[in-house]
Length: 251
Image (cartoon, rainbow, N blue to C red):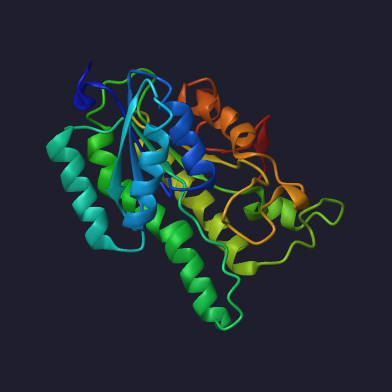
């Protein structure tokens, strides 16, 4: 059996549930892949790894303690990956929140959303970019920022579209910021490292109380399949943009 250090190394944040967990599940079907499940909660992260391993995957995976709002855990993750593997092939910035706590002031809700959904992914990408640059993986190393079409300015201002009256300024604004971070890192890290934003669509997850089948959310399995195509290099001509399962959202 190949050692984890010789495999395609993928770090997925927020990997204990929803899109992150399903992506880890699908990638662990590949014997040449080793998945780092980045999770804020040690208990939930270890449980997720245990569940995936119980399915007898062809690939391998492990828990990595990582809170994108905590620079100490980002530094520790960078140190561990560098020392243990010497490189990183794919980073999937998936961890996100949609603040629904009515006790939070607007300022607190906005700051919390930005810290988790924009600042955190940006800080992690900057910290891990040198390790991505050491990758020899084909296709080229990449960063995928899991985002949302609700962050599109054009869709927000289109009175004929479904996003016109969707509320939630903190979440929407944080995803708009993530689009700019994606564009900046596309320029700054490229062409060696490809950077994408990807909207998996309305998906069953722990993101909010309405992310369920009853509200029309798609299964995580269905939402993740097109994301895997981005990881596999099938949409490299659209790097630097906000992708969805069949196309590109306008900024």
